[in-house]
Length: 187
Image (cartoon, rainbow, N blue to C red; front, side, top):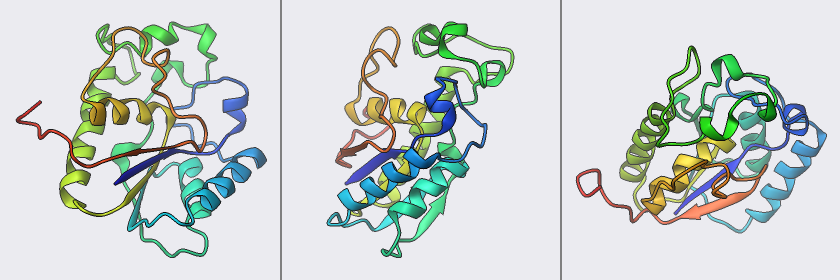
């Protein structure tokens, strides 16, 4: 089973600022959310935690792992999408919904192209599902990362804005997926 959670709340989340590679820590609410997730997962067998190297994800993973001693691996491939020139802006200050449209596939000055982002996350997921077949894996990452994760396991990329399609996990929300996915040859 693959479990995926988004990091706990940060101040930028509250301010509705987009946060890609900016290394913001969890706020007090975010720490409490991580604690609640830890409690909710206490009776769930987890063999390994794979975590984004950004501080907000690391803090979340460490809180969830408190008292459990589960190995944590940090993987750069699940770092949040690079927002480039949009980093720190509020979602209302640019075409946020177009930015999350897979089929629009816009090219930006510095921000990461959505199809390149999906490719990065899909490669990571292919590796994880092959390497940890039969294991319970918890992935601790970001809201943006939760979008291609959902699309990968459901083998579907909806039209339009993917943030409007209900694919983004809330802070410390957990989703679970079986590892029985189509191989790249079957896709």
